[in-house]
Length: 325
Length: 220
Image (tube, rainbow over all chains, first blue to last red; front, side, top):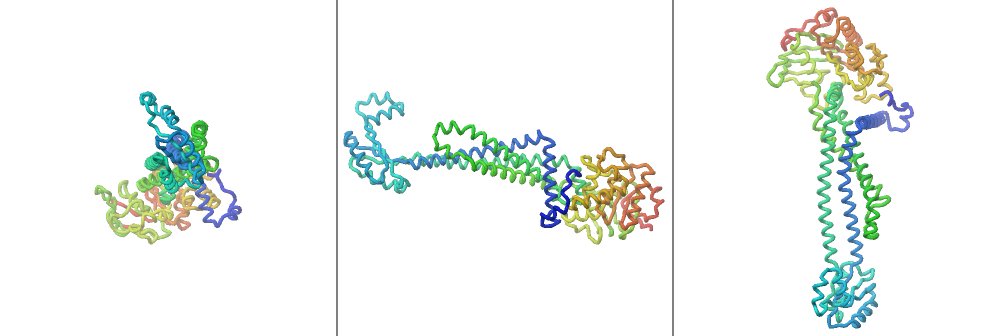
């Protein structure tokens, strides 16, 4: 204790509102420091607890990042939504190409691409794996397709539907289709994943709460005699509680930082192949730069909050049971 | 300072530790609480510390009715009281200095004056040169004196002692009792529980005698 003597009181009083506040601040600082030293005195046990907390926090964080990335991916696809025009099979190639050229001049349309019946068949056989099946069919059953990409201003869903109706009535167009349904499915999937994530995060948060609570409970058991003496010489419940609450804060905060390190390392490890596979779309959804700082701060604060909560539950439960005899 | 009005204390299970005990100890007085072991001396002290609550009757400490004291107020009551135990209840994970400083830290006394008061208390019990030692390195008489220093460091109005000389040889016991006498001389109310009749008869202080939980009369 003599080692931790504070600065002379004259300099302390200059920078603080008053002797009461300064001694409270000093006391908090001291308790925080003492409880930290207590944890560092048993590094292995502390590390194990922190690791459990870190993993429990890292899991939902990774899922959350994945979710954001998936959402970003969906949004980028949403911007690329096309209208497919299936042409009448009576029309020949020239008519189809003429129509495509005509449509390309429309201001609502950014670009068109024409797939002849033969190309359609070619693509179908390539992607479906039913090559053999179609080889037996004499006549090509597939229509020619014009894929219309709406111009930038006409990409929200209401305008898309209007465009679809408009194109539906164009001569030679049998059917106009917005490639939207699978995108809706995608967002529905994301919504399901989001809810699973919330449930999982709640479970893991409860786990962190219990782990910290149990650790603190053991610590309280180990300091039973000290608590009794403190109560005998006039220590309030709050005084007894304080170092354990700080321990909870340290555990949780350290767990949050560890989770941050794990998540960041994992993302760095993944970033390159993900970018290679999916281009910039997904990579844009991944956190970078300042996001990383926010992520770290969020994880640390979440950990501290859970640590404080777990410690509070444990201490409150135990503190009334330990009375001097 | 202390007033018991027909106080009984019955422990769960039906054991009557105290029955119908009445006495008064004025502020500034010093008295000995005597009786065989099991007569209820410790129970009586525990009632004063609010470690137990009276089953019947009223306990007053410094005009405060302890039957009605809310749980949150108990620590503040105890800060007015210094208590010395037969087993001095020291914390072995910290130095003598830190043991004695504990009540001051709890009370939120700022560090410079706390350090000054710890040294004054240690000086009083003659252990100033041992402040940096761990309690386990001290003899039992010295440990007891550390306990006394801790009890008086907060300048309590009331000093209680439960068999403070129980583990000590006669010479050390005499020294310890001398300390209590000195504290009384400067105005502290002192109540010492002891069954060491030969020792306490030498000091001229009133006796409160317990016999199987009863206090037949107060001899002054």
